[in-house]
Length: 84
Image (cartoon, rainbow, N blue to C red; front, side, top):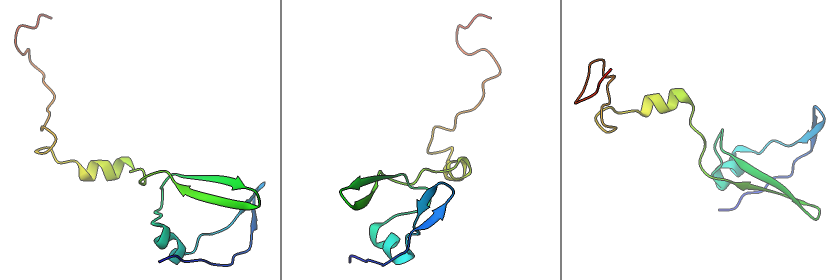
């Protein structure tokens, strides 16, 4: 379902800003940290999703499963025919 809202532009430093209401963000499937493209088309402004939200390092580490990802370990001894 499409949502819309009437908003007022605010000053934010040298830029103009508008907050996207939660209902509109949910309708557009926007999430915090998600990359978006903002472009001007005549007198309209378009905000377009550029994919999924980028994960923080903490989120990546929390999702890491050693069994799923090969359970790599740091090798401290020679393996095979290596010569040091």
